[in-house]
Length: 165
Image (cartoon, rainbow, N blue to C red):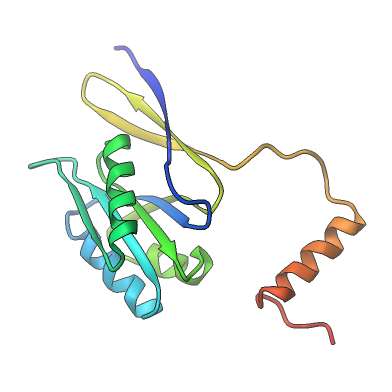
């Protein structure tokens, strides 16, 4: 048996976050929709889910037409059964990730990022399987004292840590 590897670049605007995961049932798009809206009624998102049996369609939901379209195009490029992509605006993955993990049919999360992402796909005679992602750039070293200070200030600036004053 032969396995071929393919790298699929995820095409998305740089300011948009993406969550890529795997689930196991056609109702995933509707359950993820409800989960995201319950987490934050102001969130903007698009979801695409690749069916792996029956009609094997990319199922699409969301409340932002542009994000739905981007999610659908990326899912169709990847074409791995049971894979889902969520594109987010006006929210961060940290705001919704645990809720997504709690959806009963969600099996795993591969990434949650605004970084450039490449999907790694294995192709066999049966079909396509999602192996993982390349998320962002390689590390260039270990943070120094000034990098620690910048990190702490940044987290307080964007409101994820309490101010030190």
